[in-house]
Image (cartoon, rainbow, N blue to C red; front, side, top):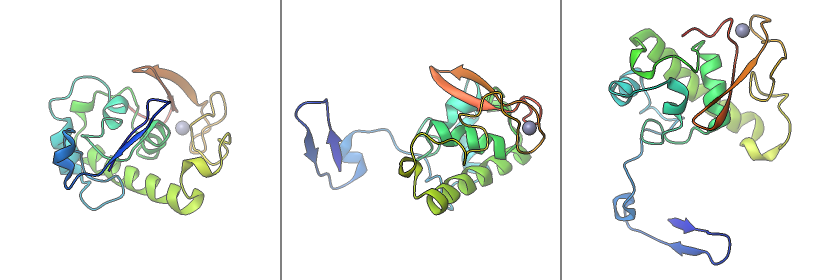
Length: 159
Ligand SMILES: [Zn+2]
């Protein structure tokens, strides 16, 4: 189903298959079994740039937005600035697991991000710049990547 909503008149179209939409193929679902160290490794192998913007590419993994990209990287102890193509098998495994757990927990605990807007108290790093990291006590930092805010702990998330 495609909803095109340029503010005024919206159109809703139903397509038999995703391919009929003419969209690029999506990566595996963020909370599904298809997301593995191997699938991530394949998607990131020839990728230039840092891991955090890569996680927002729906061809790499489907269903991860800006908040949960930061949260998953914190959980995996990987710096958002780490080069995407340089992640080894152990870190890819941690990341696949972290993405899955982060998204599943979000659905379980919050019923999705938008059910409690404006509050960052339930996030590990997102929206918590300057506050102590819940794992190591270091100060949570904020930076911008591809025009989006990224939150992370420079002390315990490694490049
Ligand atoms: Zn930390």
